[in-house]
Length: 290
Image (spheres, one colour):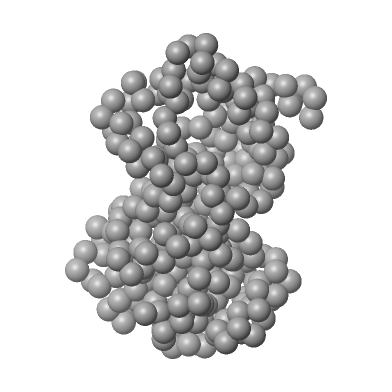
């Protein structure tokens, strides 16, 4: 169904971005791979082309408006159209609020938020000429809930969700869709390369603490799906391309948990308390013994 479609995927050098590129290529789309790590996207493009696909790699730092606009322009010049834009590039951080620097706040918003305008504005000009297209923004469950020790990332992903819903209303009856994807834990390098230090050690150390705190307080934690591979997220994104929806939830149980939050935030936050306390202990221990 994607034969003849042209797709740009940012942050395509690994993780969700690379998985989406492979999946869309498999279904017939020509894919343009954008990321800062040239060697990674070059290798992926070569592999996709060797498998019979059509792929082009364009090294791009999406925090640069000039580079982002060039990405869109080169794609249109090469293929003559643009059907799918997957804004996947993003990065997290690890710090409590008082230790989060101005530089970190700027960095989080530049890559997770400002880039959405840098790519979407020129993409929309082409899509409106065509009368069709689909912009998919990769947010996170952090775009719907608060999580400790990455407040700037949480704020940025909330902005990503809000941006997408505002865009959807602007695009009513234009033939262009906009969707936001809110994954939970995904088996990628994300938690290992967060700014300010890796979050993965904190997550690992916090897990048994959280379980113990919940048991002590008689709290039954909600049944949420754990870490999944990026290929599973790519499948959900493919489904959204075939059957567009406003929000995509990739993990079982997350949409139901968010519905509880919408109905009664105070009650729902009770389930987050063990997580917050466990992560606080893990974070403080790691700060003392990095």
